[in-house]
Length: 481
Ligand SMILES: [Zn+2]
Image 1 (tube, helix red, strand yellow):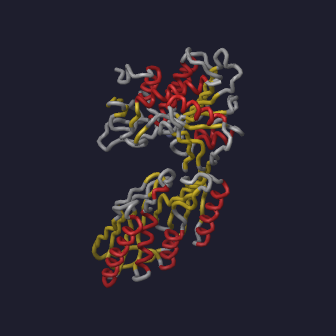
Image 2 (cartoon, helix red, strand yellow):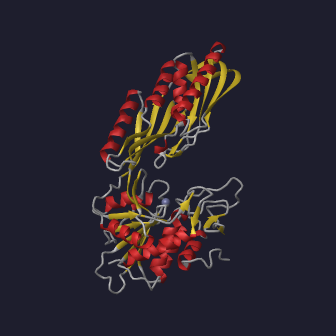
Image 3 (spheres, helix red, strand yellow):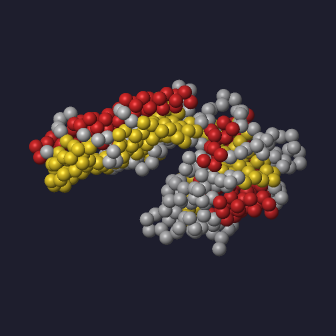
């Protein structure tokens, strides 16, 4: 039974519904990739599919458009698979249960994958149509974007003649993205030694933080739970002796940690100091984050007498220095685009294991040399603390082009259709455009898309009217000559 039947543009929603019926979370895009290949075969369209599942489908220009520059249309095949706790749907095997509510399409208890299924639906609808005028279309559909832009990194674009690319992976209608940051992950390890210590066991939890995406929300001035709990522990160490048995916080390098916890072993006589310091620390949190992150609280739980393996004095200092001295948050703002964060770093996870402290840091910058300098600071600091750093997942920035013909066309056609200027922006997060422009020198890119709300969560929804307007907009861009 078709849930989206009757919605316009019919062909786009029809392909979108077919996409939603095929499981396609990251690393499990093979079926959807094969579906796109079968689509191309049925229509006799030239295509490639690589081992990972990246697909490129080519459709020649319609009459009168043979001399217009080819256009690459690009989106990613994978979606983030998230669901509510009660949800019975197996995102690896089952299709989504679509639902229409007013102007919005969502999926029952799971992510919808409008990010980025709508790009694939638009691309298939364009390739399928025989009434749309357009230049040579090269539809590039990548895998595993959501887990580190893996498909875009590996894809071979030699079949593509296009030197201009429309990426359909932005979530706000009326916003044209024209540049993005590059990034790199740093995995830091500092060896530690332990000794036995007896005393009162105290569990500390720093909670109530808002967290957020380490790229797009790093400018919100929110606290980082690992960093702030590290600060509390340094404050406490200035006043009292204690042993640290455990420390952990955060879930992923590209997420600002919302909580962190530690287990201490402390003498009875220092309990009063610990409580005073906790109260003092909470006051500081209110003063510094009262507006941006108002509900931070430090929970202190006494757990009775215990004997645990805690950090040796020197190791405790190394761990506290790592948590306190590592640069964190926004490092600089762009002088060219005033509200754009230029360089940032996020301590995404911190975990004290038996013999080492490990930190996962996410570095971003729209300026390559600033990213290098940030990486250098991390490496030198960790060197000083006797540890080692492994860098991985490096991706290039997509620098804002002073001159972009495609951007001019997109702005002009937007004004014509909407009667207002679109917002032209650069984001402090990674997009596949960065990697693709690195592969095709001089590639002219613009990223756009219809309104999607709460992406990457089971509350994700996509505006039907926005999909329709964006379709008209896409058709106008295709027809431009
Ligand atoms: Zn996406």
